[in-house]
Image 1 (cartoon, rainbow, N blue to C red):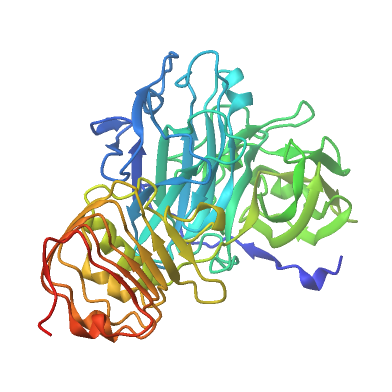
Image 2: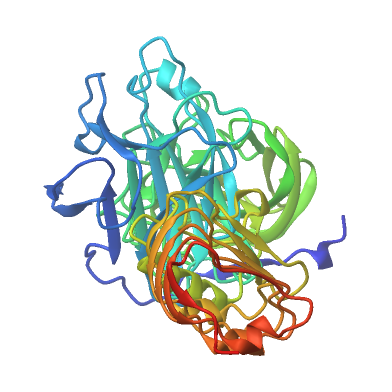
Length: 513
């Protein structure tokens, strides 16, 4: 591996002190509950304003954490996603944490389902809570993604091997400081947490208020470690870790290499972001120096790191890994203090999925709002991930993703058809037959590619718009069995190559001959 291909850097601590911790700018959603509550001084909201489908359920198991009392359960429909949609600030990074506690909601004899979770149009990963649930534990997943628009969606989706209804217990969205993880290009990737540990620590998870952004720092202690148990005065760290993680460390017992496995589980073959945090025990300053080399699986990660009371973080934005990972901290010649490390974070890089053209998404949402009972999965990105596009929607290929067909035939849709349908200018066919749509027929003349328009067996009223005659490629116009009135436009009756069906509209008349 060539080091110049790695985005590896070291940053000294800044001298400025951190401000006193305050609750992060966050949306905290207690899924399945009908009312808001204050938990540990923070307000958790009901999920009713963020999701339009699913069934609230109470878990049957006894739990202590209030956010685990309820879940929202979603129907087992392979290839369909069900999304929470939150208003966000475009261009900001957000930590997303999803929490799952099965609690037997699908039946005590039914094992927890395994399913997908999605952020906007990106497949984030697979949710598998089986092992944790067997141990009586909740499972959480954490990622960092940039808001690409004014809303951000987090979706639950049944994949081909989901065997019972998927669910979610809690959803948290925390806006991050601009400096955090800013070596990562969030326009192309997201980060999915693999491990975040306070080394040498053996207590409960460190989180807010110790961590300004409520990140979870789990304990990681080995029998061979010597915790220093001193509160170090550290501030201004890259990625802003909580100072509490520097109370303890992993260190060698002598001036010799410190080698340990981290994370404690094997990794899938992928590319990872790694950050390691160091701070010198100030009581040992007079004893000498602590200079070390760091390697990952025997490959040099950083050379001649000088650990001082000010501290340092070394990180790489892209490092390929697979299987178990071994970290080795080796003292340099002349260093007379044992190597140590205080904390570490590792994320898998998740390539971002595609994104449907914004104006098409806006138009589809207007159509959704005009329906009284839009399809349950009409939320999130309409086209992505590709195997989770909206019901009745098909999309183009290529660099600009457009909506090219709309087929909601026989889906029991009621309400009206919003005029914004004419803004879906890549549409070649619209099939809305055999529903309960009312109101007037919109102006379709901007749809220059439209070849097939099926509105039959609905309850449309008013005149047939003469502008339909201006749709250049229209070959099928099915309007039978509605409540249309007035005269059939002569430019449609006289148009060669157009199959026009208007029967079943008792108040529709032919133009005078």
